Length: 450
Image 1 (cartoon, rainbow, N blue to C red):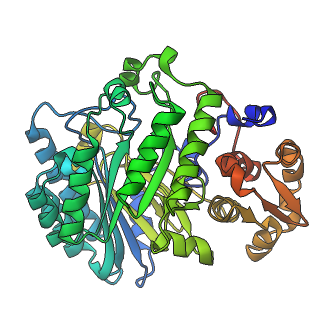
Image 2: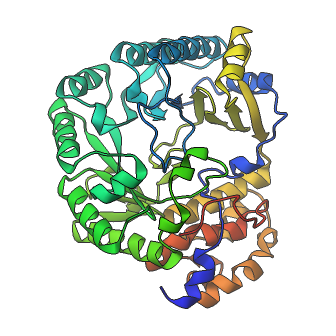
């Protein structure tokens, strides 16, 4: 790594899956406000629905998700009961035309921890309450260790057409360090089952910065993953936050690669995927040429939300489940993280939302700037400000904030246009933070840039 890049690689910066980021959500946000925003949606509004399943069969030591391992399946069954009740409660407050849910995404945790009947029950509740659009995307995250040929067929029969796997690394020494043993053969078999069942999109997640990883091991994993030809591959840097996620204490700090090694691993993976025909998308996604992400990136319609890079252009994101985050034209809402508090509110026929933020016109304008930069690696802030009714002077402090990045070569300025060279895409979040009016650099508040 060029030494001039080192200070930027060490920075703690937001991932910008929203703006303002979740750090700015207010803890005294009232649930009835979320219901009012739902009721006020345009009757012709298109919808995206996110369902959070906070359960896994086994806890991976690297995991930063809101999840747990139940002591019995009964706990998951009760969770589904409350989840369906909240979907029905919310549907009763929705005044829009049904059949406009163009995207349904199950995240976690591991959604396929649930049995097929419970998954089908949730899908049915969403369809009856809001209406799934014909030809829409139905996606879920899964653990390849839980997938069989029959299960792939059943999921496809429910309408699911996209699935994401946490592969992380195929090297056995790495898998042992992170408590995630799954062979290449197992993942390959799961991939075959899904293709046979008719899934149109299979996505893999890879990670760098894990214990026992080397440049050689991540290169091999990238080659093996690309050889299976998933439509999309996401590449994330491991965020070590044992003070926040207690199970990460199982990973020794001393065994983690340093920042220079992390950078070498990340850039090695990118080179290997490029050599296998994957186009780099935004900060950390890669896709084959036929994939909708590649097409959206090429024509400037790529979007970014809480699920990462997407083609989703829905008017609102409805979120169900403990900790789930939704988005309305007026702002963001988040359900209680604690499943007991979440279920108690549903028992009282109340919204389980406990955090949120009403956004301002300036927030929405800055969100537009940051999203375009994160998606296109370039943006004209002055043009976007004008489109939102703001003077270009609203960003008069950005030049000073960007000066160190420009000097290091990770940002370039041409007139009012700001861009990030493709070779420095890992530093997109750092450049984006110059347009974040709320951002304050603080240790351990966000993930490292690299």
